[in-house]
View 1: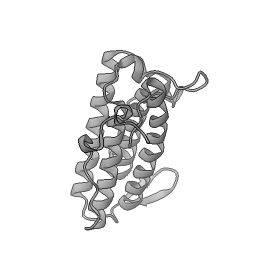
View 2: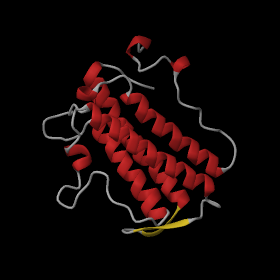
View 3: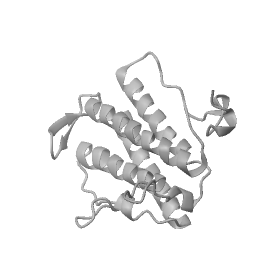
Length: 181
């Protein structure tokens, strides 16, 4: 049995909102995505720049800070660029280094502050876009798949965060032993 002292927070203090168990599909999918986003924040909570930028293993650029930066890029691409049709510029990736969200995640207070601000700006845009969408059949253009619905994007984003939150579990546990729910 896991001791509460080793958890990020005791269950009764968990800041994440419960996902609705009934209601319309848009509210449920948005709720699951919000829960996953809050999980990433929780897994990074209480750590300084050095810990957030700590790499998991020598051969990988994977870090909690890199995950935040990557999540900001994914939010930007899916919601601003491919669903809303806005022309955007990558926050981190370049043609020469598409993985710079991970590779260039520097352990500085400014890098951490910027990463969270950019991520939150992208999340705010995405939440507004979803709230204002007429329905889940609103279609965007994925350059690889062609037309995709907002429904598909929300499901994909839940999967994207879920996968990376699994990485974040191992990263955080390696940093200070904390595990989450």
